Image (cartoon, rainbow, N blue to C red; front, side, top):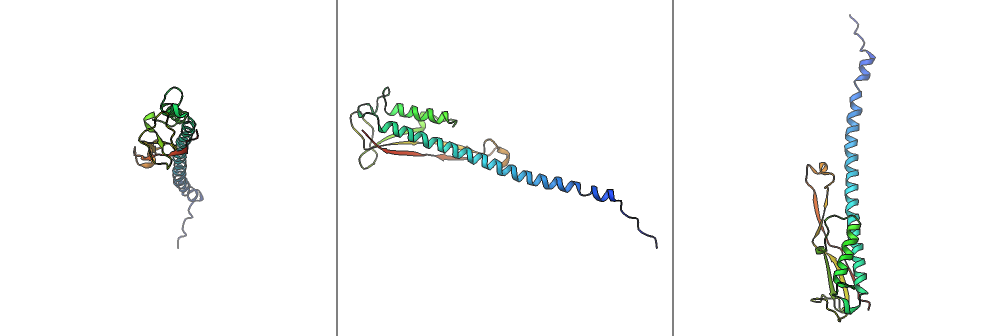
Length: 165
């Protein structure tokens, strides 16, 4: 009988080097996906919070505007409220936001919509709402969603306050 040749030790050690690289690549892909999801949803919550805070500031301004100036652009009213909301939203870094995305509504004493605000008539309440605004999730990290696709979500936060004057 001829004895078998022993396999060199060096050959057995080199056989395992590729396994660690493959495991690392799989774990790295999973971690990058999780971090990208955290980043995207964090940004979405940040935008939604900025929109909500802006509606709150606009409703607060409108609720203490003198009833003689509800529709007057210079000293208060709807135009100034829209400008305040747009400035607050753009200062927070939310993109593609204009005053057409802001709706200011006067409410009666039962908080039902009134056809329009008018100078000299005190409303029961004020509602400031974001309308027609959608945010895109996945626009900064498109490779996770399979190319250039992304998810668009319509958001419409609003704040309703009692008229104070």
